[in-house]
Amino acid sequence: MILSIESSCDDSAIAITEIATKKLLFHKKISQEIEHSVYGGVVPELAARLHAKALPKILEQCKPYFDKLKAIAVTSSPGLAVTLVEGVTMAKAIALALNIPLIGVNHLVGHIYSLFIEKETQFPLTVLLVSGGHTQVMEVESLENIKTVAKSMDDSFGESFDKVAKMMGLGYPGGPLIQELAKDGDRLKYNFTVPLHQSPKIAFSYSGLKNAVRLAVEAAGDDKEEYKHIAASFEHIATKHLTMKLKKYFKTNPPKHFAIVGGASANLYLRAQIEQLLDPYKAELLLSELQYCSDNAAMIGRVAIEMYEQKNFSTLDELNVVPKSTP
Ligand code: KG4
Ligand code: ZN
Image 1 (cartoon, protein in one colour):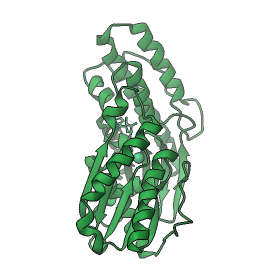
Image 2: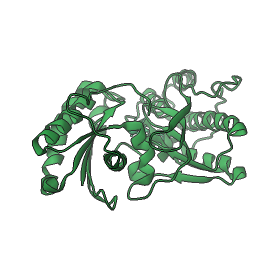
Image 3: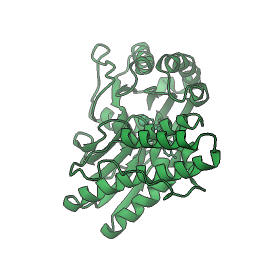
Image 4: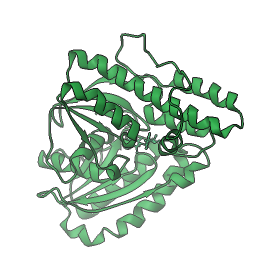
């Protein structure tokens, strides 16, 4: 079995996965959404302190599995330096105490493998990753061959939802809150400009849209009824930006198997729009189970099985936290 730890942002999670069967035997996650909610976003130092409390609590429940563990896996990049350190330190301590190998997992690769929890992998795959930290399109041939073909130049898709929710005083995380508010709104009421619509570049940008929304929120003042139309129009344009760029990309790279992963892949409007976009290509759409879209340790354990089989281990000295990295 492999014990895997995730602490790259505001979720403390530990999983136990059986290597031979890929079965997830244990998974527990403690989220910090309530604690960060008052700030409208994740406060790194607060997150680190909460991980320091939550991780040992979850680990306590894993003790019955300790004598069957063959390796310890942990998210070591990318993420918040102060929170990654909490998981990596714990992983090193367990690896040392049990004298078993240590596996450092890339969080973005983890999101890709969230598609394959308790399943076999399926490649090649075109993947859209939409999370709080990233918005990127990747061509995935295998674990070792992941090519990023487009990414955000500034804010990420999920982050823009968080920031719009903060402007409206809704709380954190913004994605589900904006999605709920947008449900009854008029998606066409606010004619926000689609980011980079005149640019031939296949890249993403959300900072301009965010500022346009800010002006609309300010103009609406206390008229909360208006917020739902702003939320609906924002969600529409934020999604249209993704589908327009993907459409352009598909002209030269028609998709066969396409996946959406990451916390924001839970967004229902996005899922529906991508389904429509894929229809003419008759491409298959792969999605993670809703519970594994957001950060979790099961996806880290799933990557770790592959790395274990390749004996892709790190020594205690080698494994370091790398806050910024690509897959
Ligand atoms: O993957 P994740 O849990 O953490 C990172 O790796 O960043 O993604 C969290 C992000 C947050 O920005 C959150 O607002 C967004 O995913 N999110 C959503 C939805 N659910 C979560 N964004 C849009 N619509 C949703 N339904
Ligand atoms: Zn994530």
